[in-house]
Image 1 (cartoon, rainbow, N blue to C red):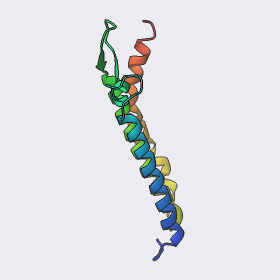
Image 2 (image 1 turned 180 degrees about the horizontal axis):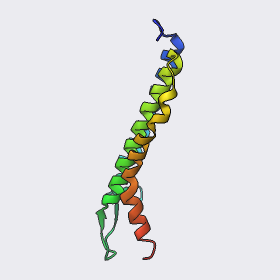
Image 3 (image 1 turned 135 degrees about the horizontal axis):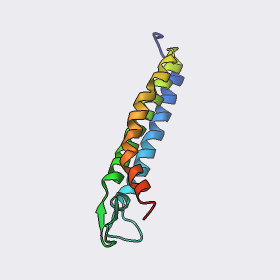
Image 4 (image 1 turned 45 degrees about the vertical axis):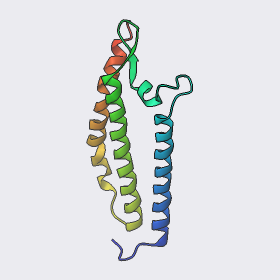
Length: 125
């Protein structure tokens, strides 16, 4: 690792972090504001709910909540990987260990299994 990192490292790190912060802010505003079609409901609550088996009312779906958690976990892994690659590119560190990350992404994608099973089970209905 070099003794002193170049200014371009900190500029690109700042741009990367700013883009990440703006993305999170826009996503939070979109998810937690009221939907135009139903002012009482937040978009997030509508996103994780589905109609009951009798067709009336809406209940929180475990598979959809698990899917949201899986998406958040995978997003976190991609963000960490992005910062790792950014640091390695500026410090000259080897990126040979990237191939060893696939089990983390496989475990994160397993959080989508309940949602996928729920969707597949509803095909015949």
